[in-house]
Image (tube, rainbow, N blue to C red; front, side, top):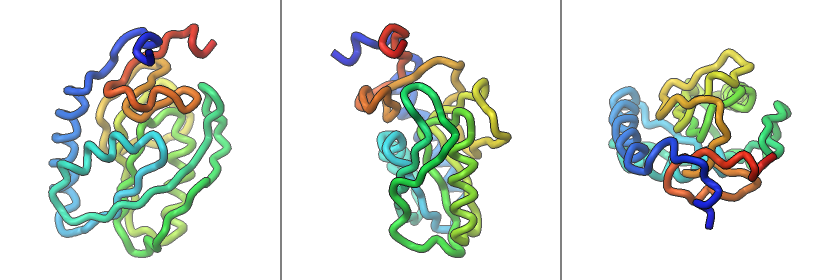
Amino acid sequence: MLADNVEKILISEEEIVERCKELGKEISTDYEGKDPIIIGLLKGSVPFMAELIKYITIDCEMEFMAVSSYSGTESMGDVRILKDLDRSIKGENVLVVEDIVDTGKTLEKVKELLYSKGADSVKVVSLLDKPDRRIVDIEAEYVGFTIPNEFVIGFGLDFDQKYRNLPYVGVLKEECYK
């Protein structure tokens, strides 16, 4: 069982749903009349994005990008674009959906890329923020939860592509990744 490897539940499914409702309302107000393009960063953002967009009440479009900078438990800082956007974003207001802001390196590169493609504005909504690990001076404009420096899984977050399907955010037992 996946849950057997969870040391503790950090954020429950109910807490995530409630926070998505709040974020959706805030984003809807802030982007009123701007029709944002909401870009999910694959694969980790998918459960969060699916929950969040239910509560965004304005016109918006969805896109996806796949970027990678991780190997096992460590962010390598070498960001690679695995899947680019399917459309132009020139002159558009972009909202990037991220599962976690960790070192900030991936987010910095993604924002640079989106601006280089002509986006008018690029803001970020992240389910989790782990400021203790930040290397780059970057913040998400919208944050679900600020968490301590623990190895988290679930609700899209993985370890070697596993645990994404847990309905909550939990801490992985150390013996599973050491």
